[in-house]
Length: 328
Ligand SMILES: NC(=O)c1ccc[n+]([C@@H]2O[C@H](COP(=O)([O-])OP(=O)(O)OC[C@H]3O[C@@H](n4cnc5c(N)ncnc54)[C@H](O)[C@@H]3O)[C@@H](O)[C@H]2O)c1
Image 1 (cartoon, protein in one colour):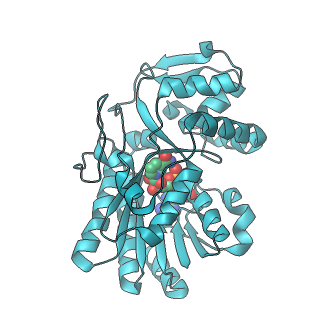
Image 2 (cartoon, helix red, strand yellow; image 1 turned 120 degrees about the horizontal axis):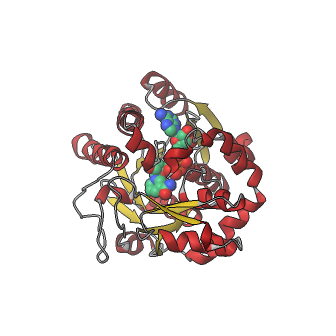
């Protein structure tokens, strides 16, 4: 297959691009190299793929790439991805996540593709209390500027399927973690703070619950859905590994043999969703896929990766310090 992947210099889709190369697919990577993009993540496969440094909101350039490359499949992962930033300024989120998705859908429609995988998130459903699950049929009810922009993109994909018959498949993964995640997200933030024996800010009392999905599991599920996913359908991709934020922070501190006294509770994130949890029967019944990596094993491996690649994470720090106040 010739697969065009947007956001391929980012955390998840760099891993996805590598997986596709391993499967023998031809990969066209498109990424604007925003602050979150980094070609280091795809350095090992750069010679085997074609990379376009391009903003997905630039419709003329995207059109040229489609005309030139004629991809069979589009996996659209490019996005502004950090909720806290969206709370400070929603505009880049609306531009990239909504307009950018529209540009990608229009290009796919014009040039024709076999499948268009539209990457959404579990955050489109809103929040849960302590019990219950989100099903694919659950009404979308997003709360943050980020999740609203992702919901618009999610629904735009469904609209293009219904209106134009574009073969869109919607993916709704839960909280990914693993190697090469940008150090503004919880796991690498805790790692870097703890490495320097700095206080670790935790929102509220750290009781919010997320479903932790290792990026390797996530990538495997998404890849399966290229061939097995039914067009017009949405698929939850979760792990069942629900953990409170405070549990995650303490687990990392324990692996690093750092004291829990580094934890500092701070004012909660505005509009902070309490809990997300996905029912994943649909993908399981279709493909037999279940996440394999238990949180405790995955986080240990991830922290080891950050130790081994501390230079990469620390190099991001200088840039990130400008934004440090918004990280928590
Ligand atoms: N990380 C998670 O836990 C998670 C969970 C569910 C869904 N998602 C979704 O998965 C996708 C990837 O997430 P991630 O964590 O890898 O994000 P990321 O922030 O690490 O990577 C995003 C990539 O998109 C690129 N990008 C941003 N704006 C662009 C633009 N206008 N044009 C072209 N490229 C642009 C960036 O340069 C970056 O390489 C996103 O759609 C995100 O909403 C992520």
